[in-house]
Length: 468
Ligand SMILES: *Cc1c(COP(=O)(O)O)cnc(C)c1O
Image (tube, rainbow, N blue to C red; front, side, top):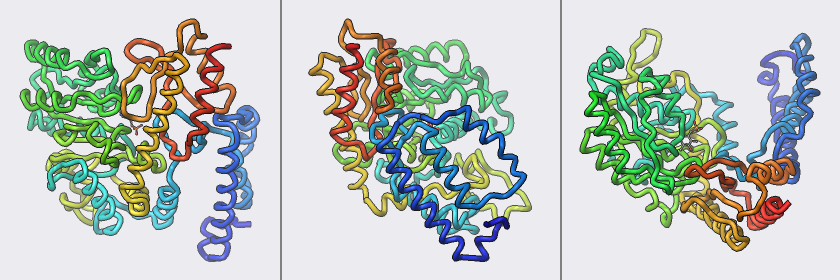
């Protein structure tokens, strides 16, 4: 029994036997998950009672506790690794990303200063540079890994504010001559409201622009909102275009947004948290045309790029603003190099080496591997929408991404009943949402392990559920 906290380090044999145990149990658990229920089946009350008993008053054998955790996890969550999980953008992680996570954990580099972890910091910077170049950003562009899309979007806002007024860094919103305004579509990711709160510009700053009836930011409405704000003495700051909406995979008119931003000297941000996956595919890349004109871009690695959770990317052409916004100097840090040290270029201080997940997966599969993954998801979605159209359903969203907003034929059961039944049957996971004010069933393919049979099974389940 390992009761000493670092006992396994003194005994490498124990360590590797525990590692092997974890690996074996995990492989079996993941197999069980793909053949089992998608949603939690655990008796939550019984679980909580067991948990409450654990007062850490006495030690347990490592293998016993590992088994306990894996057993609970196997029945205690919605499983993104299940091939019939057609949910939000949460992926089944690639094995490469999983391995990278373990390697990063074992070495546990502190990547906030370059001198502490030059290899890790350079690997991340390399991945960011390859993404910037693939998108078509100038060679001077840079950025960093974040905890996810929300942090990346937050960083965009933090860069846009001092650009709007040089005194913002010192005086905050009081430096501005009026109410700051951020423009995003009604279909954007509403973390913008939280971010407005967090930055101190207030939720009122977010102008949710109407969509054009087809899920994209209405450019006429955007122009008149900016005019109205200017006329009222408000201070327009940023246009946050969405490149792949969360609901429906729609892309705001990026060139138009960039034109308007340029005319009014606003920061143009492109939120491609999920949709950014398309840059892997030469065939689909052009769906994001205009993204290269953005001042900053969000892409999540933990969505279509299939890393483990908590990995996003922030890219910008204006790296000087990062250094400006996040600068600080203290005597206890070993260095203060604005050109490489991440603690003076990003929101985080101590940071995890999350970029290794994407580096390793890309190095192993190549862009072509990711292109095939993304294109396959799109093809499978076309198969699903084709089948549903044949059954008399409608597809509400006109998207080239792997997400469908489905409307059953008239005289079907209500959408809530259909979705509830499918989720309760626990063979598939789908969700319901609203697209352009109409309730729809949302199905999305992010899992690279879903195949034709899984799609056909979902189609059959949907058609059966709407008739009951
Ligand atoms: C998922 C998503 C976000 C939020 O990203 P997190 O990684 O969940 O923080 C922001 N914008 C869009 C368009 C998204 O799809």
